[in-house]
Every structure is written in structure tokens, then in C-alpha cells.
Length: 221
Length: 221
DNA sequence: AAAAGTCTGTTGTATTTACAACGGAAAAGA
DNA sequence: TCTTTTCCGTTGTAAATACAACAGACTTTT
Image (cartoon, rainbow over all chains, first blue to last red; front, top):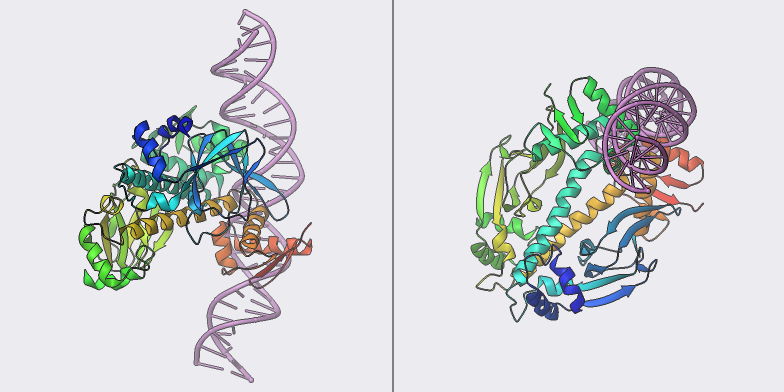
């Protein structure tokens, strides 16, 4: 257990809490640890989760198989990341995805009830943990809503406009820099890279915006 | 304040808590109330939120205006629904949407710190409130991820398959009933209704599935 | 400096989609 | 029952997209 404390310290959930405090918290949090070999399933579609999960070591893949057997990868979980939290609610139903170990991995299982309930011994950091948990899930939520906003646009152009528009707002300027390259940006917006590239150039030619590499400038009108 | 207690009782956040307890909790939760006339802005893009908001009366529209002035409606908030919770994190940045009153409305402002911190007088229902808050946002999150999964599919057919597939899994059968009509289903998946209808019929003709009204049956192979 | 590799824009074609418009079936209302 | 309205499938056309393939610019490696 001790070996994961330094990993936990670097997670958002335990950010700003010292190793000793983490160690004492782990005692009242009912943590269990389980190891998985590469390619082993952590969860299968249809199972139920009641724990909050944290990846202590390795790497996981969240994938989805539809009724006809088509497989698609939804997400990757890296060391220190939390997952499964959305399924901890009592009425959340079975999970719809498979979770598979991409490498030999270690998963820490936290009893969500223990985290959310006030600890009888009143750990001084318990409140902080609850806040971190809430803020972490809030952040996920915010990003999801944003992305949904982009993806619900019908055309590639509209997707680009809504995305770039939001980034400009965030960076508080009509110029913005993004961290994606073109392929990643296309994957993020679920469009074809070449079609997207094409559309960007059209908009540039129409005088709506300009760009050099990853720096974009938006023009009014 | 008292007039909202019965409304609060019907919210997910205060579900299962009696009116008297709600009244006592409101005292330690630092609630403030503000009224808005129809068409008045509750928040504007670029502002910061630090409170958890609950709609006590009326109806709100969450809308978005992009850099070029194009307006689109993202969501509707009805009485008893929570909103703004995703922006309460200290580093969440400015909101990217406008919130406008569609009718004369009353908004309750909850201090998120008070909710997340253990109450000194130790309200017996405080833990329950924290749990409800967590589960509510978890559920929102889960639905968002699901929808994102459907929308990230490129073609109308793939969107339909992933959606119907998930519904079948949820209902644990190869037959499923949905609550949407065709137009709503198309809006949900962000596709054109007639194109979707067309695609559904093609798939039926190809023997992949069958449907009568809102009841669908999926076939293997 | 040369070679290999990556990233980006460009083009053409086949496929897919949006949009508008229509008719029939079913449901709701008079 | 008759009328009105809503819902759904169908079709044709214009527009947008995916996909493949390629060339130039730029990076990284050797």
C-alpha cells in the first residue's frame, strides 16, 4: 500500500495533502488493491461498480463493443487518474463499457460511502478530499459539456467555429493558441483531418480568421 | 424563503429530507435568493460563478453566442434543477454561456464551500446532502459520456447503432423501447430526422433490426 | 548535410447528409 | 364520424463529408 502513496500524492484527488496524512486517511477509507495482468479485464460491460477507482500503476483502456461486435476505444486511463466515479451512484445501473489493462496494472478501490461520509475520527483532510472529489468531477463535467457543444454542430465549419470561439473566450483575446496538432484537433472534433484542413483554409480565404501553425486569429464580421 | 422549501423537497439534491430539516439546513448553508424578470440575464458569458444554483421558480435558458454572434440554445433549466455546479471549482474559469430567464424566475444561491465543508453544528443530513450532490453530478456526467459516444460516430447509421445498442444493453434485451419520438431522437443524436428515418428503414430492409413505433428489436449478424 | 519522418494543405471522387416537400397513417379533438 | 393535427416514411437534389493519394514544408535523426 505504501508504495502507492507517492503516486496518490500526485493525483488531483489527493493534491496538496502530505504523505503522512494520506497514509492515515487510507486507514479510514477502506481501500483495497488489486493487480491485473496485461489484457486482463478490470470490468466487463454489464457489471456494477460501487467503488471509486484510482489507477496506481500501469495503463487501462476503456473500450466499447456494440451489439454487432464493433469495437471502439473511448478513453485511456493513466497512472493517478480516477475512473468509475460516474457509476458509484446507487441507481446508476450497469456499466456499458469494458475496462481492460493495456499493461500490468494496479487498481485502488475506494469505498465511495467512506469518502462521502463524515469520518468519525474526523480526519482534518477529509473535507479537503471531498472538495477535491467534487471539483475533479466538476471539471470532467465542464469539459464534456463543452465538447458536446462542438460536436452537436452539424458541419465541420460550425464545429471549428464553436471550438475556436470558445478557446478565444478562454484566452480572452481574438488570438488563441491550441495544443492539438491538426490530426488531434480533427479527432477531438470527430471530423476528417483533410476535410477540416480544407475548411480552415476556406475560412481563411473568406477573411474570417487566420492561422500559422497552432496559432489562430479570429476576425469579426 | 419558506415558500421554496416544498420546491426544494422535490429536488434531487434534497430528496428524502423532510421540510423541517431542510429549513434548519438552509440556516447553515448561507442561501441567498434573487429574482429575475423574463428576458433578464442571470449570467453572462465571461462572468464567474462560485455558487451552486437551484431554480426555485420559473424557467431558464442556457444559450451560447459564438464569436460571430450566432446564437444556439444548449439547455433548459426547470424548477428544482441544479445548475452552475460545474463552475464552482476554484480554477474553473469564466462561464462560456449566457443564462437567461425564459419566465420570471427565482434563483437560490448556495455557497458551495458551506455544502462541502463539515458543518460545525453537525447537521445530521449534511452527509446526505453531500452524497446527493455527488450522485447528481455523477449522473449528469454519465449521461454526457454516453451521448458523446453516440455523437462521435461519423455516420447517422453508426450513431443509431451505438445508441440503440446501449439502450438494448440497459434494458437487458434485444428489444427496447425508447421515450423519444423520431424528431426528438434525431435532435438528441444531432442528425437530420428524415435522413435518420431513411437510415432506419435501410437497416430494417437489411435485416439488422425491426421497429414498430418506439419499440425496436435488434438482430444479430 | 543528407535522409527519414512528420505535419499540413490540396485535389478528385464516391459516399453520405441536409433540406424541402409530399402523402399516408395514426392520433387527437370537435 | 369528420376534421385537424401530428408523426413518420419517402424521394430528389444540392451540399458537405470521408477517403485516398500526393507534394511541399518543416523536424528530427543519423
